[in-house]
Length: 197
Length: 224
Image (cartoon, rainbow over all chains, first blue to last red; front, side, top):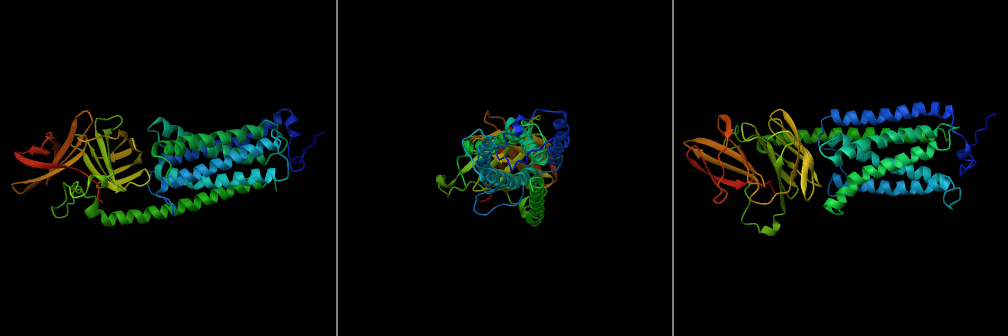
């Protein structure tokens, strides 16, 4: 007898974490994983094949496109930390309770995701998939991986009846990839060029 | 709702990305047109331009106090080749020179704001990349070949130099990159083209002897 607890009914999701891993979990992950891998590969191939133009739209109020990207990414990281905290709360790992936790998690994620989009468009359109040193190679790979894993995570969210480890795993991977992307770009920029606007 | 929310998030992201990509394409088209319009003075290679149309990079002006010269010069060899590339950045503008010391050279110019380099020169010379306080890195295309490079910040007399002289009505133009170890990589061309390896610069007197004539050599700088 199957019974799928509605996540909205059980905000902490303590019930779903007890569900054992099963063959159905693996089956349900095939499409999200394939889609995520597809996104990552398409982004990487586009970045490599497309001739970088060096030019893209800029945002007023900053000294240049690099500063805009650095700050967008940094704000996205702040929202990603909110994501981590609210996710831990949803899984009952933090003494935070309340109906606000899930909406805050959803909306902080959406905001963080939207903030990364101008950055990736500029990266791929103006600069391309770069391999000329370890930092740029790591950044390029992590950037593609981030959007791939994010796609997988979003698609996984639409599936019910998954094992309890699935969402924390992909959520954690999204967070780790974003932190890696940020560390190889914005953090590097701040440490080499100073904090600029 | 909980089924569709994540899909809507993905879809919104894709739409925003598509819109930004469209705007970027448009921005790029406009910018390319501007570049093309400016091309005669901006990026015509010195060797093929008529003397009046040739606009050599302005010389380091002695009238400006040194404190105003917030200039940074990067120079190094390309990855997987013996050619060199040097970039001089000042006040948001950059001039770059690619030179293999044999037959291929390219001068490129463009904006250098916020650590991004996007330089162009004709024909087919482009340099894109980034720079920080210590290094510049990116990709340079010249003579139909593409190289990656990582060039450190260098101090005078290392840098990028340029010289012109007219001997018996023939205009000679030369460019050099001087690396931190003292290596000089230069090419000079005449009105007819015919690029050849350039003789060494005497860095003390900032002159070079070319075809029996003495050429005054100056450091190349971007337009203010």
